[in-house]
Structures are given as C-alpha cells and as structure tokens.
Image 1 (cartoon, one colour):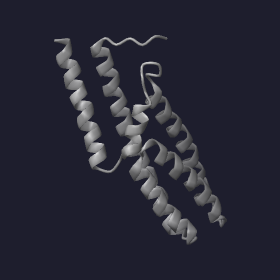
Image 2: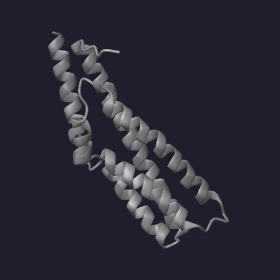
Image 3: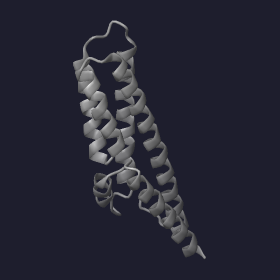
Length: 154
C-alpha cells in the first residue's frame, strides 16, 4: 500500500515537471541541476533554488526602487541587475524568467521607462509563477520521501 502512494506522488511530480517544461517555464539546466543531487546532498536542488529566490527577491526589489524614483535616469544600473537575474535564472533552468528579463533589458537599453515598468511587471509575474510551481514541486517531493520512508542522515 505504501508503494502505491509513492508511485502516485512520483507520477504527480513527473506530470508537474512535464507541464513546466512544456510551458517553457523550465529548461534542460534544471535537469542538470537535479543530476547534481545525490544521497550525500539530498537537499541540493532545494537549497540552490532557495538561494536563487533569496537573491532574485533582492534584485527585483532593487529594480522596483530604481524605477519608482521619478528622477532615475541610470538605465545601465537596471541592465546590471538584469544581467545578474538572467545569469542566475539560466543557471537553474528558469527559462521564462530568463527570457522576459532579456526583453526587459532591451527596454532598458533604449531608456524606455514605460517599457521598463511593463518589463518589471512581466518579470515579477513569471518569477512568482516559477516560485509557486517550485514550492508545489518541493511539497510533492517531500510527501514522496515521507511516503517512501526515506530518512537522510543529519
């Protein structure tokens, strides 16, 4: 009976991941990240993704602060923050976040304030969607591990 729950949860995980890949939310870099996880570092993906979220929150907050300042004119600063966000998003396989950051960066290169405001909205939307989906994935994974009775050494 225990195995049926584990199988169902693994199927749910596989369906969620397939959906995220199909939607273009994730790419092959996420799979590469997963391959780095093993029994010696069972929380590797979770830890890396959470570091990404912590750092991305700071970058998004900085971008918003820059853009709400009516006197702001240093679009290169926006480009620097976006370069960081593009790089970290690429490294974890956050394809859609990366893609909308690239579009946002184009608006900043043109010193297009309305385009930058819209770009920030789109990036924040994609970022929050990714965060919600990763939260759901990690919850399913935790449930699967509990159902399997897996215990990792502390």
